[in-house]
Image 1 (cartoon, one colour):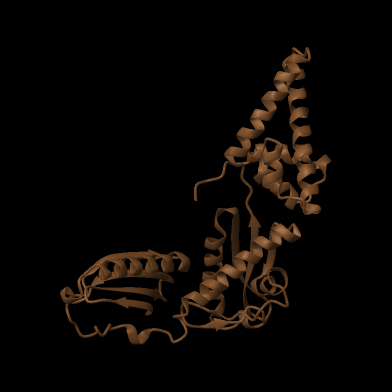
Image 2 (tube, helix red, strand yellow; image 1 turned 60 degrees about the vertical axis):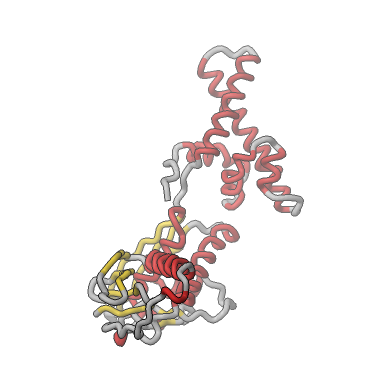
Length: 313
């Protein structure tokens, strides 16, 4: 069955956002108003993307309509969309659903920034209750695209009926909201009581930034030049000196940034810029969030330089 989640009409076109229960995907369709001839049709697994496309199409049509003189706009009766009666009563709260997804995304990022957590693992209801959310956070009520709903702070409600299927969509939307810096994996399983659950693992992906890598290479090259100035001539001696020069430089910037953040005397970007290494800010922020001691910087730096480059969004 196809449910119409949202619909926009003007005298020229009809735009609908639909949910296909059998294929478990979302459709954004643009049609001629009078003939209902299909003009555009996009299919998405992700509710976020479908909603963004729908809103953009509606905004474009509203802008176009506003430029047409009122006396040139044809007069029509409202088209009685044949599947509109199938729309679920609770499925049209797009802003509420997207707000909830965004709230979860924000809290996952905060868990990394404030608590040093870079992975979360467990059943979805346990994660939502104990790790991602604060027990004192506001009441949250999720309306899923197919019309069912759940309060994700209640540990029991996410495990019953058809909700696991809805949770899959929720996780896809969370993945989209998090972007390429996080990965959301999940699997279904049945326990001894045959109660269906979804086991989730959310973990942070680490990449090397091109701007950071270029800055690190520049610092290392300065170390090579200083090594040669000091009379070192073998390649191994020069490389060893350059690596130590790089480590000492990073440690110095890191210590100053840590003190500035701790004593609230400035932010990371400002400190890095003052030290002449503004491109290092993302790297310094990362090791600050991980609460690394200075003696762990060499190992972390080595790992950083051997990471994959950040893929395009």
